[in-house]
Image 1 (cartoon, rainbow, N blue to C red):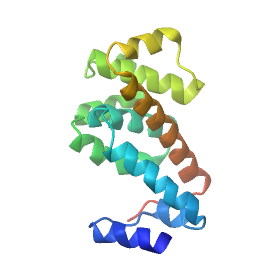
Image 2: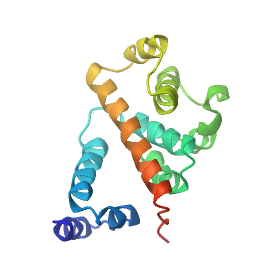
Image 3: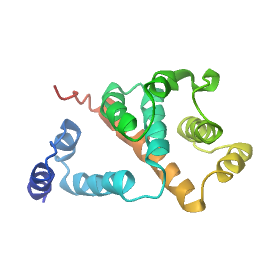
Image 4: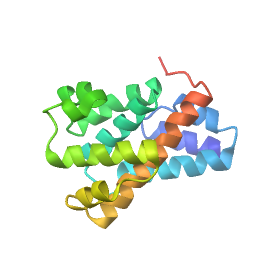
Length: 160
C-alpha cells in the first residue's frame, strides 16, 4: 500500500519527504494523510495564496521549522510576497496585507490558538469567503496544526 503510494509520488517527479517516511510505520494513516494533504493543496476552491498564508502562519505559531521551510517556496509561488512571508510573525502591525488577508490571518490565529474563532472574526471572514472556502480554510488550519505537531513530536528532520 505505502510502497505503491511512494512509487506514484516519485513517478510524478516529487520526492517522498521524511514526514511521509515516518508515517509509513502506520500505512493506513500514511495513505489517508496523503489523501487529505493532496485534497487541501490541490482540490479546493480557496485561493492558493490565502491557503499558504494560513499554512505558514500555523507553522510559525507552532514553531515548526520543517513546516515553515517547506511552505515558504510554495507560498511565494502561490502569490505571497517575500515581504508578507517575512511579516507573518507580526502580521497585525504589517502594512503588506490587504483586508481579506488580515481577516484570514486573524481567523487562522484564533482557530490555531483557541480552537474557536470569535463571532466577530467569523463574521469578518464570511465577508470575504464562501461557506465552502471557510470549511476549506478551517480544515487547512486544523490539518497543518496536526502536521506541525506531528513533525515536532516525532522530531522529523528536514530533508537536505
